[in-house]
Amino acid sequence: MLGMSLKAVPAGVQEIADFLADPASYPHPVKSVVLVETHASIVSLAGQLVYKVKKPVNYDFLDYSTPGKRRYFCEREIELNSVLCPDVYLGVVPVVRRGGRLKFDPSGVGDDVVDYAVHMRRLEEAHFLSSRLERGDVEESDIQRVANVLVAFYKRQPCSSDSPGRNLESLRATVLDNLQRCVEATDVSPDSSYRALRDYAERFLATRSALLQRRIEQGWVRNCHGDLRPEHVHLGPDRVRIYDCIEFNEALRAIDVAADVAFLSMELAFAKRWTLSTFLLAQIAEGLRDHDMPKLVDFYHCYRALVRAKVLMLLAAGTNSVDEARGHHQARACKYVQLALRFALFGSLPIALVVMGPVGSGKSTLAAALRDALGWPVLSSDRVRKGLAGLPLHERPDAAIRQELYSESFSRRVYRRLTEMVRESSEHHGAVIDATFGRRADRDELNSALAGFNWRVQYIELTAPEDLISGRLRAREQDSCCISDARLDDLEHLRAQYDPPLELSNQLIRVDSGGIGAKTVEIALTRLIDRSLRNDEGEAV
Image (cartoon, rainbow, N blue to C red; front, side):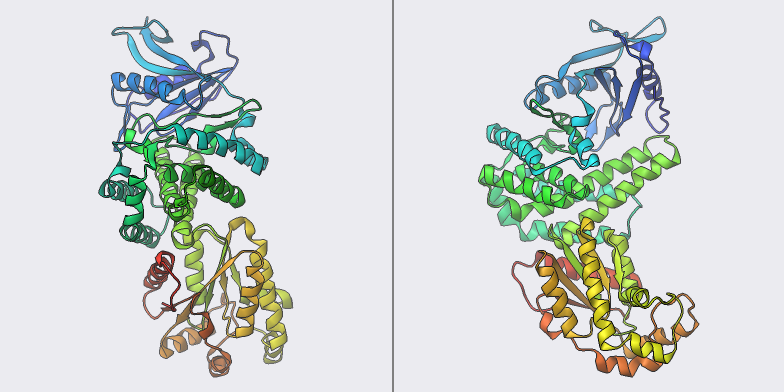
């Protein structure tokens, strides 16, 4: 039995939790109970059956504040889920208070009813898509089964006449309000990330308004599932069951089918199963003959990731969980914000983000900030160089050794190793490279090698005023933690060796790092969004 202690929730929830946690509470034999808490409900796994009680909470998107509302939404949950999961939902069971104690009573009516539970048949845990993803036991054939069910479902669903998706201004309000709620609920990511995400959302909605309007007119806004996550998909040997659709807010369920599918494909990407994510989208778009879905789906990926971040932070803030559990929710929320930014900046293709530029231009500082914003590894040429040479990271070797380390032949080894490391980081589907990349030959080799693996390469070239670069190099003399060997007396020699990346016009943005560090990050993110939203390739920003 797993007990729960709930604090920052309305009175009475702890009593319900204790009642559900007690095996003696059930009208059938139960050896042990497992409780699962969400931001909106408490679910008891009691033997072969499940009981789900909605919390008396009232969020901006959900209102379970009265027993009457909770009963209505329990009944609504069963009605809606009978479409994709007809053999699991068994009914609504009242919880009554008699003799000072709570009990289940299917015939309960009147003043002694304190709450209601959705009664369900328990599905085998091993077959949930979430469990199979954790085991690494999901193949394209499994995703094809899910896609087949969803395509048939969407084809049967009527177009919705009452949804934010039916009105562009309402859609804008829904997306931006969710982002604002995410900002208010979380402090787990840099402010620059949230500002970039808002910039992306506002500009996407503005520049793609004709496409979004066409979606409405063509009938792609339909009564969907609304909460299509791996833990709601059951891949049984006999059939695919998809349950727990949104019942508490019609507007969040009556949406563009692209927004619905994007939830599940985003979660597959979150689980680092990018190929399966892409496969799911392709199969559903093909099955529905929806040729515009690829143009919208990364926007909805971004939105869905922020929904998950918000809900996780509501869960973290709304319980008295131990610090470890709260920290777990916060860490996952941070990863969803990072994933949202990744979709906003680069879409779904794997990408190497190269932070390049002359010595002292601030590459390592920006690379570290992008690492925090995106959750990607930073691959540093300075670290690789010393690693290949077997030298301590924070010690500057003598002139003779430096001459060998920075020779053309050794540098070629360094840049080839960086290319290998990008491919080795494939589970992240992205990497930040911190390196000068001053030779065109090294840039050409990176582009050629990664193109063969369907990786894109995006370059950020940093520049800075001469006096600032000189000051930074001078400060390295006193910095015992500096990995780079470049100092002020190397500046002229290194500048002479730097070959400006004139050939990279379609892959390059330029950023002046002469201001405050945070401002440099914001400029870089803004220009990456410019690149993301550009309809066709242009010259360097």
